[in-house]
Length: 327
Length: 283
Image 1 (cartoon, rainbow over the protein chains, first blue to last red):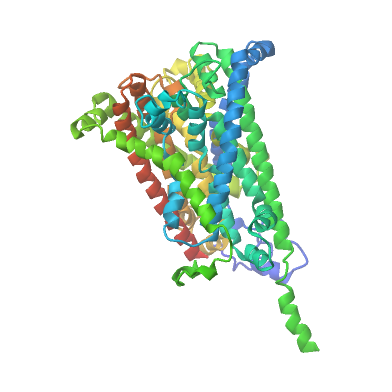
Image 2 (cartoon, helix red, strand yellow):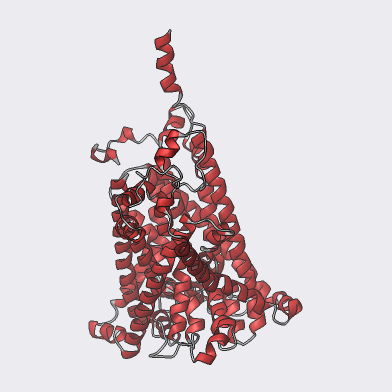
């Protein structure tokens, strides 16, 4: 068989020739590993199928949102965005995200700190519980708040007496949004902080820093990219949540309608252009989210590489004994 | 990890804030997640066992389970196959626009489900770009069960890609070279060397896509047609019962969904532990 033991000097890249002539590159093929790539036709077939799948399931739906919105020209789409109901939906969505994201941010940092930096009994179980909202159906997430605060719920009667509305009002929408976006930031931070260990923080504490100083000056710079990453994903989900919010909102136009719910109402009223015009706002938000996410990933990788290229104290260790031996 | 056997004693905790952060974590977790979820469980206790069984096993609800689980299974399987393929292409090949494609894979995470729902419906309806092409052949993808499967494929797409991709990136090329040197064909190398390495990640991604598909609501309801007994998913049954003020019935079905998602969460955790063990053993 055509094993690398071949003594033909014109054979495609093989280890022996590369060893004997180190200065000269291999004769024809610059490719490194011909042994671990597929035949060209296999490669092209796989690429075509994969890209075709991506095109059908990702590119087409995204393109459809914008074309459907512009079906009757930019003016018609713009009109739909100028409606007062659309504006109040946008305002409510922004308010909801502005409450839900910071609350989950604080929780995410607290949970990641205690889970990543300490060992304690039941830690694995706690981590599972933090992940729980991810696997609960959004509809069930909405339902639990109706059962708690609804007219027939646990504290519903008490709330009615005191004239507090939670379900079918803004607080319910915020609560349901917090529930479905609950794990996003903690999820990003826990593995990151676990990987970084506690040495740097311990050093800071030993050198006399307070807990807050350690957090601000040591931990935060280390986790900043993970934090941004978690926040934008959390924000995208908070602004786009549909199922859970739909259960608790009560669908009162102009009052308890978020942007996704507004899209649904317009769509069900056969106002297709208006529905897609508002939907394209959400699609733009998704695109912006993807771009920021990509940039954060690049910055994170660059920081990692920079940290790897510049090892702080380790290289000094081997040189010291050598110097000592020479002296 | 290695400090596991060392008995815990106070001076070892140099870092401050353990009590504060753990306390806050437990408080917030209880208020937002645990107490509301327990409300769900307690509400079911207001039903007798017979009422509960009746609520969760009426013919219409049973039909919705069959649809939800069947469609989720098909969608997760399609995602496993194509997700593996996409991960492979993204890791092993270079082609123009690769970075854009890589970023685009996360679109289903970022795009609100309602938007995905109406956009897929617009594509697949008989006057849409794809629907109009298929209509002459008598293929209908929107407003029936096919639509449910397609929406669920869209929703679960990133899970398999994102779990398999890092494992493929870390896979050692030396093993494949060794297999080739020992005379294995490329296909044999794939099945006996590469596939066992990525199998745990692939299964994890499959389970995640499946779990997500079972609870999915927003994208499905627009495209499903929502005919009772035919194309009505389980989450929609819950909404329907709620709209008729049948809180107990809605809760009973919700508990069934909740128990299933709990079970799936445990399966996913076990799969991830398996993956860590396997990858740890290799390096």
